[in-house]
Image (cartoon, rainbow, N blue to C red):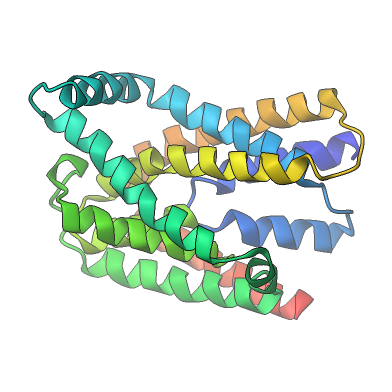
Length: 265
């Protein structure tokens, strides 16, 4: 890959990993439009590592509090809201691991058809708009209960359908359950950490089957750029989401889906 290829894909992945606009739709559309070769699993692993670094760094204080509280709770200490939130992140991750195990490689490959990605981008985008307009938005992430977390976790499993957007569908379910926009986004981003980590591990296993040279300078650039773009995305999204609402992202998703249908189907 040349430098422009690396820069554009890295920044695109970092931004779209956390915005409710579907990273898979963008990573399918851009190489097709520009007639680029497949970037390969090694590069995919690298940019996901960058996104993981960004979200862990941004929430480092919350992660440290949750980890300490969770360890104390497991050791017999009293549960508090930080330990409970840590448990909810674990519980919320289980459905996507289970359904990801059920979906084998052949099914996953068939789901990457452009018309499926476009339909999911439009359909789930409109659902996000409807829920955002009609939600009460009175709760925060510390008000979640087990049934709420299971619902968000099962919704997250729908992101196995390319075009759905992991952050988009979890924010949608959070809003549906009465979370504020900021709280729904925060819980979605916290929930992303084990999912991105697990995805990176699985991709790393497949990566070793690839027979192609590893250009470490390209990978390091990809990690750096995806981390920077993802960190900026998280920061400004959380600052602006209450003011902007979800409509700009819904409009963007619909236009993106139409563009994919027009150009690739």
